[in-house]
Length: 121
Image 1 (cartoon, rainbow, N blue to C red):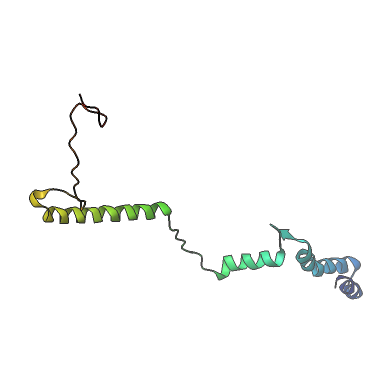
Image 2 (tube, helix red, strand yellow):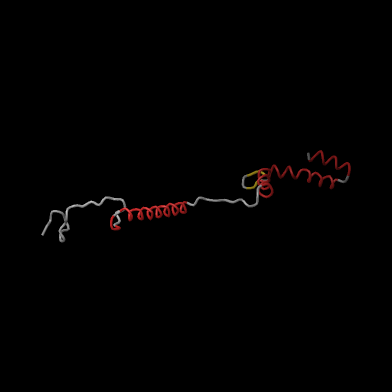
C-alpha cells in the first residue's frame, strides 16, 4: 500500500510530500506487524486496553473468601453451640452439675502414694 500511494502522491505534490504520505499510510500497518507488549500483538493489547478503560465498569467489586475468616466463623458457631448445650445440660442435670453429655465412668480407687499399678507400699 505504501509504494502505490507514494507514486500517486508524487504526481500531485513533491517527493518529500509523497514520502511523508507513504510513511503515514504505512505506519499503522507497521505497528500492527512489529509492535508487541508483554508478548501480545498490538491488536490484542489495544482490545484489552479499550475494554478496561471504556467498556467495563470502573469499579469492580472483588470479594475473596478468606480461609481464616471461615475458621473464625466456625469457631464462633462452635462456641455458641457449646454455650447453648451447657445451658441445656445445667437445666437437665440435678444440682447444676455439668456433665457435658458424657457419662461419668467410675474406675477402681488408687492409693495416694502409688504411681504405678500393682506397686503398693
